[in-house]
Length: 382
Image (cartoon, rainbow, N blue to C red; front, side):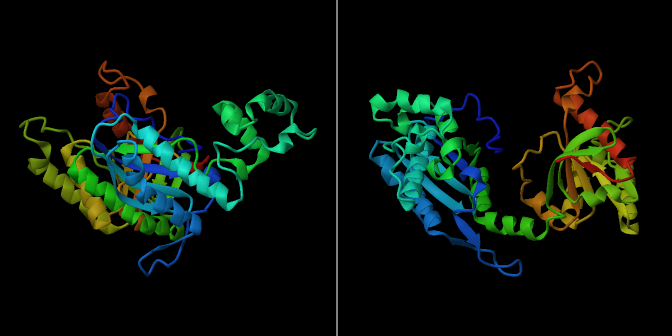
């Protein structure tokens, strides 16, 4: 969601059929026009909607009735107007002639109309090209385009998408659509995932409040230089400076008995050593949490608040956020999440291509070892 670097839509997914989705829309320019925080961290955080935010929320709740006029059967389950973005859960109940994108575009258009009404402007569809585009102060290319559309009533809708973007750059924010062009949709996988989506929407104000009040623990960096490598990072970067960092790396099965490694005495002995070092103080666990034994130790750190540096293969983008348990661990200052850039160029492992999960997991453990031997300040690039 840069402006906007949303992750790619789900290739091959049927956006005309039944399904439930978590939708995220961002206000153009990230302007805080929808709401304001109303409480501090020692109370339940809440949001005070602006009149525009109330209108956006109302438009979302009215979407099922609006779409029923077109024969589309949908339901909305939750929504929240954060200051500069919107989250909502929407369900398509029956296959439609419209796509999900058409549904969201209609909602966005209604929000933009309200935004323009508040400024005394005609709606997007019927808004004439601004008179300033015909003046000597306008760039030559824009004067030419404005003149070219004069026979069509000189309406903004007569422009191509690229032309509208150039036009909005010149005439300013008031003429722009309310939300950015793109949006993010997360497809619901099952009922448990659906409940998690709804809980995420309801919990968003609290999470945002924590990020505001605990910036050192909830820090997001797109590029951090650690040694000779670059990572995306989220969480407590100070953990990189801890005097002892211990790697947790376990095979899936014991090399001799072939038992699942986490069920062996060797694992129990190693586990006890890891916990003992943590309890001595100044020790952070480093692991990608791939094998079952690594996962168990990673989860124990998260649940008990042990210092943990977790490496993951998924990239950390500008608006990426961890799921609830890791988010809470970050808020407690006990977790740093690192995602290496260029993981797939580290090299093949055992003649298996570097962009396979097998090589990625082995290379993540190689990086964990490097992190353990790193001492000093990480260089924050951006």
